[in-house]
Image 1 (cartoon, rainbow, N blue to C red):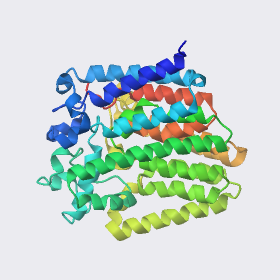
Image 2 (cartoon, rainbow, N blue to C red):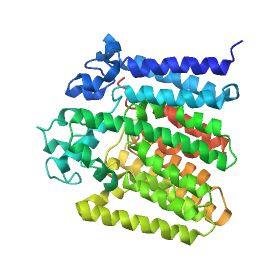
Image 3 (tube, one colour):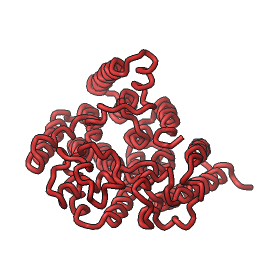
Image 4 (tube, one colour):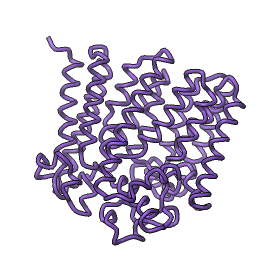
Length: 418
């Protein structure tokens, strides 16, 4: 007799296959970049199997329903994980990453923004921290790029690393990034499992919790977001820290800010939770100084804005962010953003104090702080869930797991054209 957990995992794989393959149609409303056209290279190897209705106004609701079905099955597999062996889980997680790596860019155009910033620097000799894609309207990437009026909010190390992609064609650059982010996401999952072993926690739960989540697969891998690379660096730091290389681990999390500033959320907790806090702090400061010098040397002072937490995205609000919802209720979004910002600062300081003075688990405290960041953020998008999932998987805190799942459920609707 088939075990329910195994059956649910099989059905989940089928649902994920539908979510990855069916949107691969010309003009697809799920593949936002088709606003710039639907060339074969964009739709990818699944283009022959795209659903005919993917380009219509009814494409969003079925996709959203599919996300909810996947989320429910994901939760059931987590609950019945004892029925599924680690080898099967690893095979499924790897296979699903390959599946979404081959899918077209789902629900986001950010990957083309990465390419646009690289081409600004390489092909047009313009700084991506002072110029936006709208400044190169005749470039091949322009029709596909998102946020055409926005300068780069990404770390200078990431921007420089993408410059070689600016010298090659847009299709090749896109698929290189797609594969790279899928591999980075797999690396995050692997590091979470290895760190769980080091900490004496359940590696099977950790791998499933991060690697099977629909926000990881559909948004991070499907959309080729650099959250995967950011968290690969951060989780490398957490893995080092858990292996008693605390200064190196703390420094590694700071290095993640070279991709995205959100990486440093974890840094103060690892530093304060170290056996030699000042040594870890010094290591982190050293890396931070190196990043600032790199940014200044490559791009001048304008690039330093990218090191602000969440950066200029906070000038915008997404309709499902908690400050936006609250602001609509009280009649002032600016007031709501200020209140949430103050509440976050109080929570972060309290959790840092608990880590430093009371010996609270740094990973658990970093997880709760990351949750608070996401709740307080005026700009909330589903791929940000990857900031939280690895920490919640390692925290040995059932309440953090439940609240993380609740936040993921809240974010399922974001970016889906309903």
